[in-house]
Length: 429
Image 1 (cartoon, rainbow, N blue to C red):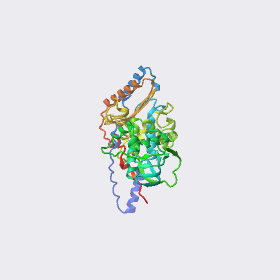
Image 2 (tube, rainbow, N blue to C red; image 1 turned 90 degrees about the vertical axis):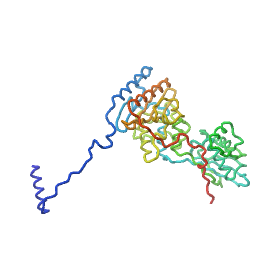
Image 3 (tube, rainbow, N blue to C red; image 1 turned 120 degrees about the vertical axis):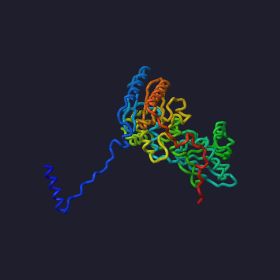
Image 4 (cartoon, rainbow, N blue to C red; image 1 turned 135 degrees about the vertical axis):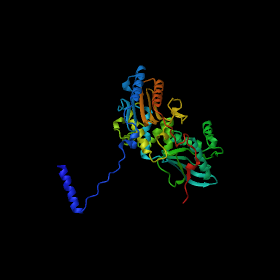
């Protein structure tokens, strides 16, 4: 029947066109097995499964039940190993992964938090007869070096004495102090070299040689208020490090106050969890947060969700000159912070997490065979030091199983704190 139908169609074409139709030309199609997606093996890896089984056996030998230990390992294309992967477990500072992605979703890598400096009153012969006003917007890393640079810029404006008060408005914190009153008192010291303590002197020594020592003596008190005073005149816009640089410092040192500050600026723990779950495309119940730092066993994240968040960060950073390894510490590159005393294979970027009875580790392994391999390990028990040893051995075995690639980083480990270029003079109208 099909042959008769084909003959009829051919005859109809001959009648319509008056000639035989040209034969169809074959279309060259790339062999499916040559497509780039198939360069990464997608089959399970029995050796990885054995490494996971051996790890759980070692943990059980320490007296800790395997069902309380969470593991998830995957490449970009394949599942590789797991244990209780979708159960939300107390994850300690793996919470900072959620804070990181929520911050990136909110602002983007190049965002800078601005601290605005106003003056109220008249300036003559170096004396501001009036008040100095600081309006913060959530800079989580305003430290001594930043205060010194700001003081020098105030000196460049001609301000050396303030007869009135130092007024703090908005979300301003210094040296990781959440209390604006305390932060204002610290700033008052940092702006005036005659009041420096030994700690300030030590931080000053980290600045470039010949950096001036600021002299802005404030006679009045530190006042905290909700609104700008009338007749405030904007003089300086102080910019923070970029968000990418801030996240690197937060994750490198697992800095809890920085994480709390960023989480609050995003909108709080509930908003952080919602943004992280949506970006990572995981159920919200697998990311349960009470804060942005991970302090408290009530912060619970599943192993698979922590990996999904890391992969979502990598996806978010596409098109940027940096990747996920630039906002988390990397073994072999970073010599300070949470990886300093670990025995993690070089090139592996990680986020650590530690509480009294929690030891967690999540990150990415660069391999030649499998591409990027993402992992999360969450251990529960009271032998934190031994957990760390077993985690490092676990990663070493994976590194021996695969050939690791050399990973380049586009971001310096130490940022330039106190960079005077981040203090912008406001043009006078």
